[in-house]
Amino acid sequence: MKKIFTLLLALVATTALWAYDFQVDGIYYNILTDKTNEVEVTYGSSKYTGSVAFPTTVAHNGTTYSVTSIGRQAFHSCSKVTSVAIPNSVKTIGDGAFNSCSGLTSMLIPKSVESIGEWAFYSCKGLVSITIPNSVTSSEKGAFAYCSGLTSIAISNSLTNIGEKMFQNCTSLDSITIPNSVKSIGNNAFEKCVSLTSVVIPNSVTTIGNQAFYNCVGLNSISIGNSVNSIGGGAFNGCSGLTSVTIPNSIESIGDRAFYSCFLLKEVVCYAEEIPVTGTGVFASTPQSQATLYVPDTALEAYKTAEQWKDFGTILSIQEIENGVENTYSPSANTQKIFRDGQLILIRDGVEYNAMGQEL
Image (tube, rainbow, N blue to C red; front, side, top):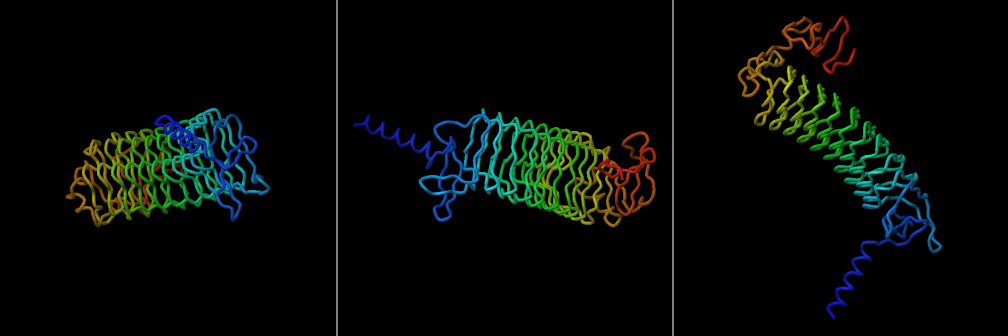
C-alpha cells in the first residue's frame, strides 16, 4: 500500500512539473482566460532548442487564442536555444522566462511588451545587446543580471524605475544611457558593472539605491542630476577609478560608506547649501586629506567644521573662484578649471569640457 501511495505521489509531481493545457507545433501553451481567449507560452516535457518562433494566434479544439504572454520560467535553462522570435501580440515576459538561456545570442523584444518580470533574462551570457522598447513601463528585480556578454542596452523612455539588481554583474556593459523618465535607481542596480567608465544620472532621478554602483571599478566620473535627494549606503562603494563627483543642491542625505574605497577621488563639488545628513564613513578609505571640496559660499564655514566634510584637505567656495581660473587642481598637466554659472568647466589645450570630460 505504501509503495502504491509513493507511486501516486510521483505521478502527481510529474504531472505538475509538466503542467500545460495543449501543445501545437512543439510549443506548449497554458490558457490564461476563456473570456478573452488568451494563452501564454509555457514549458513542457521537452526543452526548447535552436531558433524558436511562435505565432500571434494559435488554434486548439476549434478555438483561436491570442498569444499574449511568455509564462514564468517558460524557457528556463534551455541552454540550446539560440534565438526566440516574440510576436507583437505578447504583452508580458514572466519571471525567469529566459533564465539561464546561456546559448541565446539574439532577442528582439517587440513594441507590444509592457512588462518584464524578475530574473527574466538572468545569466543569458550570450546576449550582446538588447533594446527595451518604449512600450515597457516596468522591469523587475534582476531582469538582466549576470548577462556577462551584454555590451550595450537601450532603456525604454517609459521606464520609471531601474529595478533592484537589474543589471548586476553585467561585466561587459561599457555604456548606459538612463532616460529622463527614470525616477529611481534600485539597490545594486549596476553592481559590478566593471566596464562602465562614466554615468550621467538625469535630472528626473530622485533616489539612488544602496550599492547601486557598487564595485564599478572602471567608473572614473559621475554626474548626479539636480533632483537627487538621496544617495544610498555604499552607492559608489569600491568605485576605485572614480576621480570626481558632482553632488546637486537637491541632496538631503548620503548613506553609510557611499563613496568608500574610491581610492583616486580628487574632487567633490557639492552644491548643497544645507549640509546633507550623512551616514558613517561616507568618504572612508579615500585620499580625502589630499582631495578638494567645493561648496557654496554661504555654507563654506559650516562645511569646514562639519563631521566628515571637514576632513577634506582643501575646502573652497564655488563662488570665490567663479569665472576665475583656479590652478591648484589639475587632472592633467595642461588643464585649467573655471566655474561658470555655478558649473565646473575644464579647459585643456584651449578646449572646454564639462565635469564628465565631455567636450562642450
